Image 1 (cartoon, helix red, strand yellow):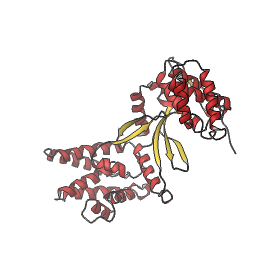
Image 2: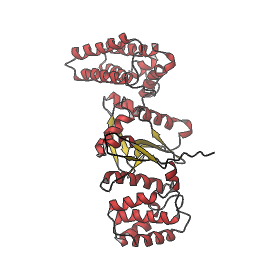
Image 3: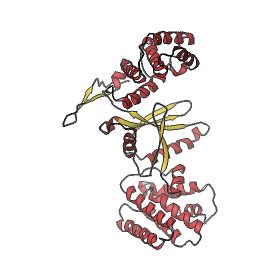
Length: 377
């Protein structure tokens, strides 16, 4: 363990890249079964490097290591004396080096991360991406996607949970905070040959999620695969949406559209055609010429992937355009609302979705409708 610290701080020649040695230095103490001894030793070794290092470059790397440790685990879960001793040491260092802004900033960064790490339970070693940000003492930046294809870059620290970031995103999007619990972060992993999807628990650290991504990419069976990880904001529980609730209509529409195009709605062909036509109407209004041109050029953007080859291409175009021509001149929002309403005709959707109603009275009641538990053998 000490050897990897010396390699990361360049006291010894590197065998692998510097992050490899930093991760090895952090890995063993993170194991809950080894107790606090190695955690205490890791912090003590870092403090020795800081105290006894005359080389400015190596000293900076020693400070970086301490920042990585503070973002990973406490020096001890039982020895409060050591914990407070390190805090006091940081305070004294920042005062003695007030003329050196970088040292003062390091102390403040570590102080903050130590305090917040004591509140959460980290279970993964920081990823290379995270370590890169820690070295620069900057928040990690990651895009959070919407099913419309838009995304918002969010900055967060190692100790921020999914819940923390989701709350901030809900506020930023202007969604009613009372509906916070109806939304969740949804992880999609595209491995070329298979797509894996799962909800992320609110209590998880987003930094731990990044670490799992890196570990997955480095697995031997994934070495020659292109793997793409993304996090989406998704509605977990559907609730009644008013016509004036434009933002929520849009979020719900694009989420259902994603399921529709992936072939996850079990619907009759007539409903498939009507949904395709409503999507076309929402995008091109009643501009028939432009709508036909786009449908002909990008038919795969309107027909579910599992049904695309069940009929000739021209058949789909003809049927969708016939339905599109007979549609009323809806606004984009009205087309989306009708799309949502028709999609609810999917019997599978009604069998596994929880639909909730919120009554605006003194207490909050949640009424669960059409909630059928199915067991598949």
